[in-house]
Length: 431
Image (cartoon, rainbow, N blue to C red):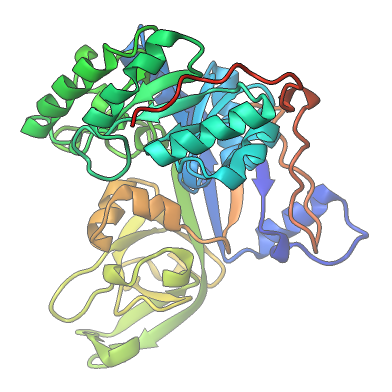
C-alpha cells in the first residue's frame, strides 16, 4: 500500500524518514482518500475485453479524474495499456514523467508556441481546427518534428473539431502520404442514453468521413460508447469515467467496480435538546434529544453543500460504525454534522473515521445528492485528504515528498527530442 500526501501536510522535521513522515501525515489527516488500483485495472480490462479487437486506451485527464495520473498511469501501463489521453500539456508532462514510452495524446489542441513542448515530451496534439493544423504544419517544417497528431472531427457535439466539410478538404493530403496523422477521432454527445437518435446519426457521419482517411486508425467510443456495440468501437476506444467506477450504462446496473473510498474524521460529539438547530441558517431542527458527530469535511474538500439536509428534506448519508446516518443541517466549508442518535452510545466517538464514499455509497449516489454527475464528484475531491493507493504495481512507489517542494517530474528521455533533419513539407491546406 502506497501513501501519497499533500506536501503541506508533511511535518517539517527532517529527522524522520520519508516513510515515517507519510505515516505521521496519515495519522494526523482529517480525511483519507483510498484509490484501489486493482479495481481500476479490472475495470480497464473489462472495457478492453468488451472492445476486442479494438485497442483500449486510458483517459487520465484531470489527474486521472482525481485519482492520481502517475499512479493510475503506471497501473494501466503494467496491465497492457499503451495509449493515453490527457487534456493539457502540463498533464502530459506529469504523465510522461511516469510513462517514458507510452503514446500520449493531448486533447486541448495545438498552439504555435507549444510545438517545442510537444516535441520535447514526445506527445501528440489532438487537432480540431484548420488554424491549429496550419500552425502544426509550420512547426513540423521548421523543426523537423515528425511525432504525429490526431484529427478531431465534429459529428454532433458542437464543441471541438473540424466540420465534416473541413475534414473532407484535407483528404487529398491524406491520399498524398507522409501526412503525419496518426488517429482520426470524434466524440459522442449522448452515448449514455442507449436509444438516443444522436448516437446513430453521429455513427453514420463518422463512419463515412473516417473511411476517407485511408490507413489512419479511427476512434469514436468513450466509456458509454464502448457499450453501444462493436459498430461504435472502430480501431481504438477511449474510456475514462468507467475506468474509475462511474456507471457508463446509467439505464442499467453498473458493470464497473468501485474504485474510491473516502473517510473523514469525527472532531467532536455534541448532544442537542429537542428544538435546537444545527448549522448555518438553523435549517435543521432536532425533533428529539439528538447526538450529532461533527465531521472534518466540507465543500472545500469537494463534499458539495447541495448534500445538506433541512427540516423539509433529507440530504446525503454517511456510514458511521457500519450504519448509514443522515447529514444534519448545512454542509459548511470544512465541517458537516451527522445525526448519530440511533447508534449505540459507545459505537462512535471523537477521532473515529466515518465513510463518505464507499461501504455501499457509490460515486453515482453521491452525485445524485450533489445534483451533478460522477465526473464532477471525483474531480472535485480535495487536496487536504491524505491519499492512499492499494494494489496495482507494487513497484510504483510515490515520489519523495518534502516539506517545501512538490514531487519532481522525471526528465523526458533524450530520444524524445525532435529529429535534427527537416521533414518533407506536407501538402498545402485547402483554401
